Amino acid sequence: MLRLHCVIMSSHPPAVKSQIDRSAPILLTLLSIAFLGLTVVNTELSSRLMREDELLQNLQAVLLFAAAFMFAGSAFRAGKADVGKLETAALALLALVAFFVAGEEVSWGQRIFGFQTPESLKAINTQQEFTVHNLAGLQRVRHWALIAFGLIGGLASIPRIRLRARQTAEWIAHLLPERSYVSAFAMAALLGVCIEAITLLSRWGDVSQPVTAARYPISENAELLVAGTVCVYALRQLMRFFGRDASPGVR
Image 1 (cartoon, rainbow, N blue to C red):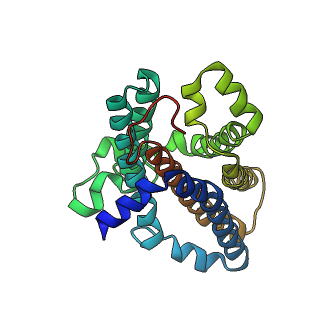
Image 2: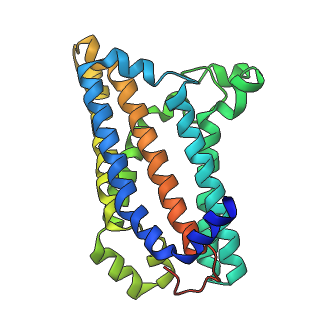
């Protein structure tokens, strides 16, 4: 069955890649919108669905580890096909970033292996975990990083930007997402704005408990959307090199 699947993917990579580019980001956006609606209607239920070590939380890590694996595979194939050092290095860097974020999502296996957080780290970590992203000074940075991810990704998906990139350097154009990703990037930015708005309202005045409680599921919703978008994008990159000898002209 796996061999048959590989043959099919190798025989029709453009058609499969086109379907992924058009459908997957939009589907991810719709699912994110649905979960945001659930958060508005029933914050308690959405928070329970996003609890630590539950299905949706673990799915984030699985998607990011899969993305890291696919980016690494793309970098290997790119290097083997000699498409250019810069493009190969960019794919390798994406693999490292995806692996780091995935490791952060599972606290680097802390709850799996049961090791303790060093006291020096526990004192400055908001969740007292073996992670970097939960350090007290980085909480607001996460919100802005989410907004930046959405805005930069959305701009990079605009056809005119892609055309200008192709005129500047072909390898950059190869790495830019298709315009169908705009909806996912825009949703990520919107969720980041929502999280930051709740944070500011909580600091500046009295905010009802349901509003502050919504920050956690909205944040996890955003992280799951980002993980899904990155995974789909990583698959798209891998399929540029799937079952064929890659060349600088492969799209």
